[in-house]
Image 1 (cartoon, rainbow, N blue to C red):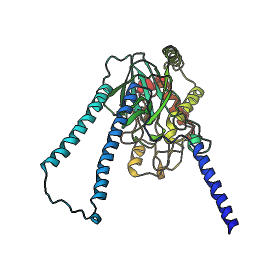
Image 2 (image 1 turned 135 degrees about the horizontal axis):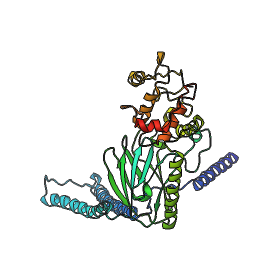
Image 3 (image 1 turned 30 degrees about the vertical axis):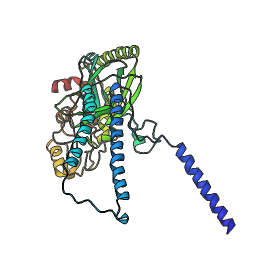
Image 4 (image 1 turned 45 degrees about the vertical axis):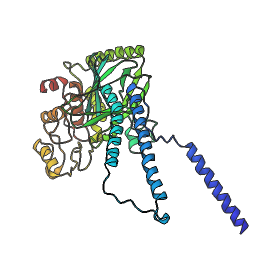
Length: 400
């Protein structure tokens, strides 16, 4: 018996030690909201803590009085309930006191909200546009614009590779901003509702099609700050991160110069008027397809059954009739719902203007003439399609 007791005691001690060690080795378990790196985030945090402690105090007073009353006026001590139906004094107290508390909470909250809405006299203005499922950034004072898309490899998403440190929170082109400057951020969307959210800034803004919300921030410390789309915007909602790189003024100016130089080089390389070879278009088209189209149609063109049509010649697409009808009318659906490559002119219009009422969005504003020409050429000559069609950027320019 005694031996069994010590064996069990040793097992309990061992398990307890392992649990304690695992708790110490785990990541920090944060319960409170982050402080952030802007004055706004600090003000929001301070307001949050002020309201929190007011609520704690109210809870202590209310429950303290309640428990005191239940204990000292319990039936076992012979307490007899007072008989009254109304008390003007009590009515005044429980009306005036909550009103004063609410006013005391509303004053600092209003001050913070007013400060958050003051977007006057910015040093830099950036327009943020939400797309399914990427962000478009436009520096209105510098004539610079680019798209920011998820860069986490699809192999990690499919659990074929070990997930990286910043899984689903990494992009190909982060938003670069200088520290110590007032930055006005205009937020909108091109398709559905999105929400641009970076916790370190202390706020988020809805991105609404046809409407512009404006916000501002002054980042105090250089660094990388990550966030996400905070609106359920579709299938790949979780694959739409926001990454900000805050740089010193000197590094920011150097980045601007580099971006303008790259833009000039790209413009020269993607000249609309020159004749592209099929090899050039296929290479460029695969790059565009893998970066833009693969999220829905997949890298191999296989699509998603019942949701996104495949691009593979002869593959059957089983989906609800409302989804099949537009494809059938445009000549992309053959007998028995098999995929065929319809007219190249129709293919061009689909990429440029999208398909209304479906998840196929318009890419006229997202992709250049060369990128659209290349991806159409690639799709029409891959996965068994072999149409031989070669679409030139000049053709896309005319089709616009």
